[in-house]
Length: 143
Image (tube, rainbow, N blue to C red):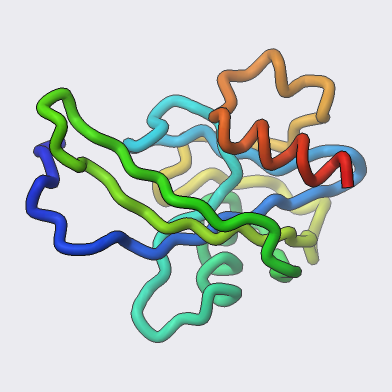
């Protein structure tokens, strides 16, 4: 992917921590940033969408799961530099707690997700999960 040193401003994005029966919904990222790592599903907000609409659409596109966005649980910057020091990615990400409306539906990875699965909390250590996702899960589960 070419360097994005011509970025003019950050991109707005959303993610969802979807919980079901002691498991969390994760996707394996197919594209940068975080390519090959497991993370909560999410993506960019499209023009005219609210943040809640965007997160519901993104989770459907990446997993086939219909969710209802709950409250905001985390807001952070994700700034990634390339080897030359140029900014390659700059996202402002708003994460929601969300609940599945069809929790027994078959997960179907799509969009930029190579895989999607429900992961038990005690299985997180066996996957390559992004640090941001691990920290978010730990913070939310501690209440």
